[in-house]
Image (cartoon, rainbow, N blue to C red; front, side, top):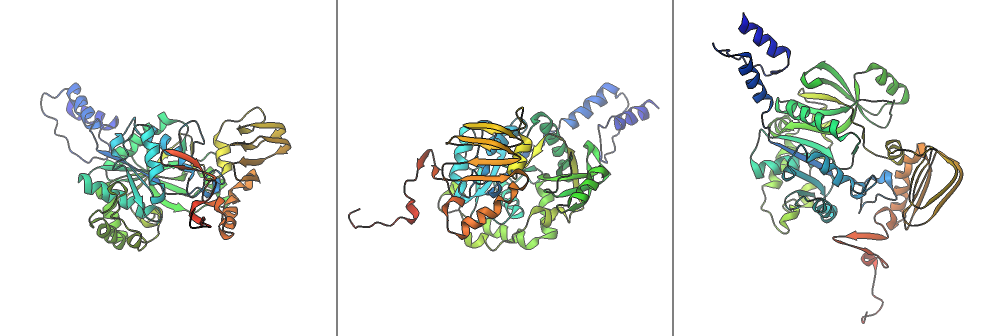
Length: 434
């Protein structure tokens, strides 16, 4: 009778959720002994890696974010760049040597410099894509590279965009530990952000049956809704913003790629089987010619919308993808006039504005609900609610052949920022003696 009571007690306090193990309670086992065994199982060391996706260009934060120097390299908040702050919030939980960053070939040196500045060895940490093919190939590249190095098929891999921000790092680390436990059980976990307003700029995930660690099975992914639908999701209580953050076992995600996208898996394995040539740090066995043949597809479409192993972990740690000037404004603290002001700014009768200056004085008078962003070569001014449309400005710059969409007047090269008086790429010598 006492043994049955102890076993029921252990189940009730959640020491063995979903394991499906039958524990033989031997004669002489005390409650203290059983609790110690349960604690040992809870304290199981799970080999865990982080994969940071740093391949975006952040065009909605132009003119600060540009193709050659995208938002993950910018210090919008505090002294650290976004990629640096992402690494820093992971290292209390994960070993820095088990972090891998996937970026575009053109950003390799800057990403490496940024992580070395915070004490992370760049060698082997940064994996290069010769061209962007969306998140599914980027994640698969990292998964197969890690397995090639370590052969840890039972390792848990956590995926994070390198350009998101989180306000409550302590709460994030708690959720990260829960996600690792769920992934170790065989779930493919996505961090679902609890919505606090009817956002129309994010995709949503609907939760269904309850699991352990406060998680739910995934019922469905839904595209960015209109305002009315977003309000309905907010009232329902079981819809969450799709954060693009995941955790899964290496073996589990490979099984799903094999089931749903075997051709992508086969092509990537073939690419990585080639001998490394050139700069080994840049993972140059991956050529542009080969990589362009891979399907351009997100991890949501490739795996998450098809798998039956999906789990959503509701999270509320002050997350933002800062995908626009409006979302950065929403994230940052405001002054007494509800403004976010950074730089040399004089504001008169100005409210509900985001104003950022890099070099020149900015003076505003009698304006509201505006974005004003100044850089040495460009100024962007917009109604704050429509600032996301700056992407169309970037497209116009491309069509006109303007360099401002691609690079800054001052270009940070590896270890030395230099001001480009002439644009060397397009410069032609006017005489043989020059």
